[in-house]
Length: 109
Length: 126
Image (cartoon, rainbow over all chains, first blue to last red):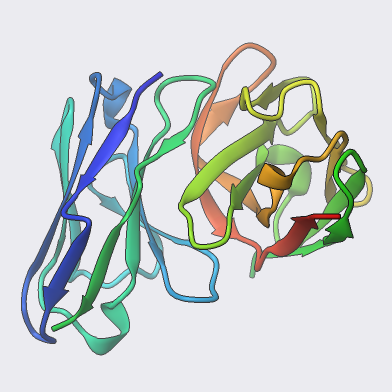
């Protein structure tokens, strides 16, 4: 089973700053089947990025994903107030097991 | 617009049973695999189970295998989760979600999840 590790656990930044979130897999993720989700308090998760670097429908272009193999990154170009949330990565190439990382909380500095 | 609406959550005693439902609209339900993901209070996300569009393929996390059963009624555009032998560590918000960027049949299944329903809370306690 692929284990995902996210770092840092918490990222304290100010609006307008750039956020860089990391997701590392214990084994190579097949076909870069790596997704990123955003979750705000009391809300369901929302898909941001799939296939490591493709933005989901309606996601602003300040969100970008990169990486391959075992190392992946979610970058938020300039933080807006609504971007402060928890972000999870998920691998979905290891059929039929779907695993999530523990999450990175982006909070206001 | 795709909409997913879960129902059926509530308080149940350890060892009890509960059936969750997820009513889907806005897409061709039978063409998509569906999944349940749960989130314990204050914790992260845990994949629970997935079913292919036809229902021929079902997949479970080890933590629920043999206790939970996923099913679907494509004529009613509804997904179900039958939960038996419930334990305290099953307490969580349960989300249903539609498959995206993936493929799922009776032998293999991979995909991410988009969108998600609003969730329904299951509390297992005496």
